[in-house]
Image (cartoon, rainbow, N blue to C red):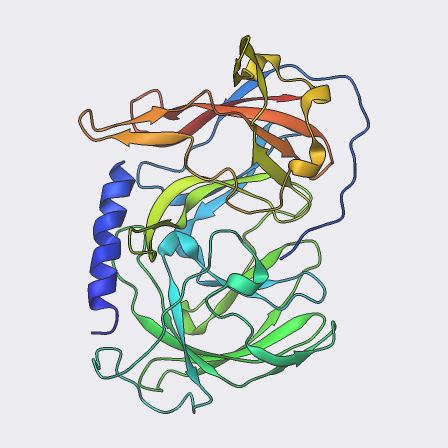
Length: 353
């Protein structure tokens, strides 16, 4: 079966670890009265089956939904025709080329050669599995290559593989995409118009029941952080990398930027130590160092202690964040368990600088 070995290894790593684009113009923040430190938490669920959107400015969850609700997302940003896969379900795609979507294909055919790709966790539009599906674009519309993509629909919240679908993006204009999708054997073919929404980063599509467009994401100006399960990767000794599933925090691609603090203070005559969370002020922060990289906060604020079967929080790591309103925050994580001892509930302390 295509990917059988690959999927199995990914699932093994998923079990182990689970137990365990575009730069925007900088807008400097005018100094202002700092806020008070605030502690809050979100709940993804012990199986990380919920995606949770959080707004720093209002200190509240502004949206959430199941990881099972969607398959692919379509950019609503003018001139950006990128298409993303559901990274919470560990989806992948392979380009079959300019073939008929009606032509049967057997995903279990071991002689079939497909270069499987997943969306890189950085969120850059040129690093998606589907990639540049168009041969030309003028900032308003895009002309399709008419390639067919075999899409592995990943693993749902109950750890069940969801099979495959063939996809062709026929066109894109300023306010809609036109797609066709079918089962691998060419049957059950559907055409779907996907209308975009300029208030959102993406609109989402589910392939279930003939396909539907689903409104899931809050308005792009209303949230800063997304807590979810997603693909990431680590590099192996041979120079290759292995994708695996993690849970953590991703930033809103709309104007949000962040960086892990590397600020220090003197410790002795010839050494320094990290500047503690409590001591970081607005004046310490170099705003130009903050980056619009989706997984820049990510998951490395915790590590899994296999001997104790428990996540350990690295609360000494401080993250500096510029939100959708342009305010600067410092943030650190303090827990990953709820009051009943179940994992999947990140607790964090943050303060406006």
